[in-house]
Length: 163
Image 1 (spheres, rainbow, N blue to C red):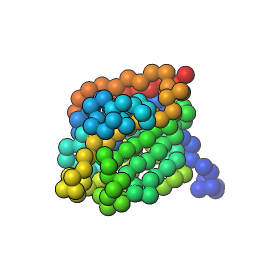
Image 2 (tube, one colour):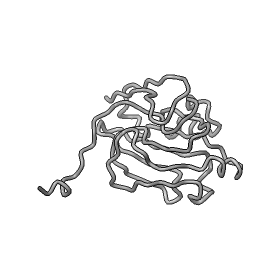
Image 3 (cartoon, rainbow, N blue to C red):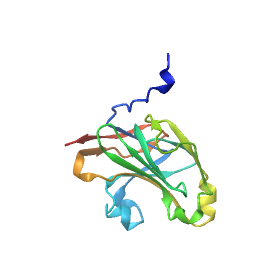
Image 4 (cartoon, one colour):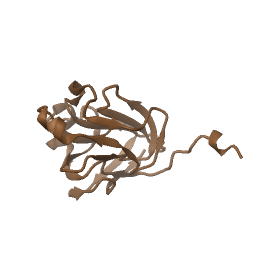
């Protein structure tokens, strides 16, 4: 009767999905050493190539949305924390290229629409549009397996297992 009062459960899903349409990159290929040297953790990147639709790369609870909207943190049911980082140095754009429609505390399913990012605006401002999907609590990660290729937003890119 009062199902709206019941907290939504996080779906157990160990798959990783492309957050946007584009070409897969290994983190080592990202031009920012914070990501390429895996200082923040391990994962993958996507170089967007047209469509601006952003989807969640994992199922979980939204733990952080940066005030500048360039980064989103999601806690998965398996205990992994995933950072979705939208572009390089786009923090300097004060959120202007991003339209994010989720907030802290939201439960998101994998491939759920999160918003959009204006790729042309980012490029014309001289910034890189590469999107990183990074597992930040590496101590919990057992395996991370990803596949090269070109993806549509929401296509399966890989899988993780936890210790």
